[in-house]
Image (cartoon, rainbow, N blue to C red; front, side, top):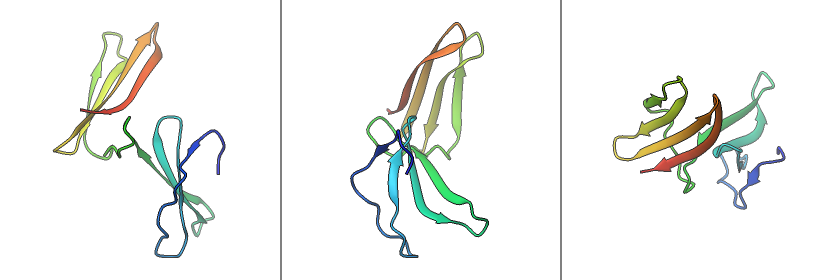
Length: 106
């Protein structure tokens, strides 16, 4: 497993093929789930899932709505699953991103 990631202390259930997966969270709060198996082409299969500030899964595969400041910087990203809404906000100074709220469930 890669270093620099927060490692969960629990394991996910064993997959149908008998491989047990170990979840990790990257620096952006995305859940990384890797079975540790390589596919037929020898490429490790990895799936990332964004988590909100309460460790809930954010459905980032759904449609997004974006807002921009007058300089064209993306200052918010909103996603909804039809029931819940999550917003990720950023601030910029001199064109450089200075904050990132992470996904916040509303």
